[in-house]
Image (cartoon, rainbow, N blue to C red; front, side, top):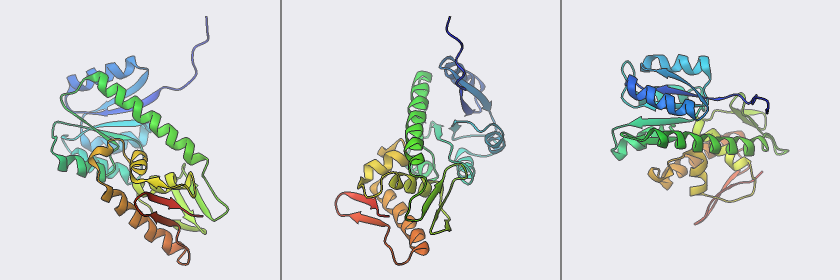
Length: 235
């Protein structure tokens, strides 16, 4: 008989105020070898994430105490944990608002619990690939240092005040200096449900990231636009 696996189970925090639905999703995730915790009140989510450090958060949009969008905003103030919003509100404006606040994906109710499990696995695989690529680009001779554990980045010893999305964007570009990334490729590393995010979203984040890098190195243009293609980081 082979020895039991010592690989720790991935943890999913389920934020859902419908007990039956939360229990069903939890059962399916446990059957797929995930650990789960259920929180039914929006006011308790931040403390749960800080205490448990889950690998992913399934976040209902309509919650008692504190709505999902506000919770997402609060989580993104200190954590880059993947967030999947669960909602019956399918209007595009709600989807855009959620993604702009830092959600990684959306799943609309009613949904199949199997679909939730598949989506969770896909996002965690993508997150792991992104982390691996970024780990290879922790620092460079040109003065860029990315610290994933502390979730900080600095250039020329000057700390960059980045949002979570800007941090992921810089991390992606820094994984391959000189490589031209298309907007779609950048979106794939920023959001999972890239179909509801426009090219202008990437351009807006690039603009903000450029401004912060320029403040640390006014004489050097680090992010260059390649007309009709995308962006690259030059170090």
